[in-house]
Length: 236
Image (cartoon, rainbow, N blue to C red; front, side, top):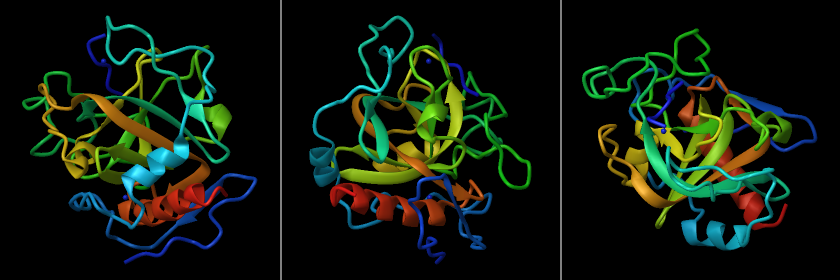
């Protein structure tokens, strides 16, 4: 887990949305450790149409989050029928299994662990796996109460790009707006943990009751994300 200074070939399974949590399993190796992050434009769903569909915010959090330590708490978690979402900054999470881009030399705040692990027991790789960070459960909001957990499918929107990802790490309970090195790179955001990221304009959409397994299979996450985003656009 990264504590900042108070700071997705294989096809998706057909039945992804159900009343109970759905786990999508795949035997694809495309998302295996060490594979490069997928390109930013992973499907046909456009950023503008997703944002338009989300519209205004119906808050599901009981309070608001800060984007960074010392900033005002003004970011709610919003909800729709099939997803939760928030719009914030993007801080770069480089934590997890060390690599040439994410290690204790490139990131002074580096941690070699993430809240969740791969199917082989190893920690996630921030530089190869697009993932997002959710705040630790608190009185403000508890992600578990919305069918969200390790491997939950997410769509991250920045400008005209949509990057599919999974929930891969947990951050401070009062701060929101963080994603892995690979997520930032896929969106065209500077992924350097030393001063990279962007100060605003990133929308994080996490779909309820939809997970991929194994968590490191980005191909499965991208396929699931595209399907879920399309259903969101269709009002289903």
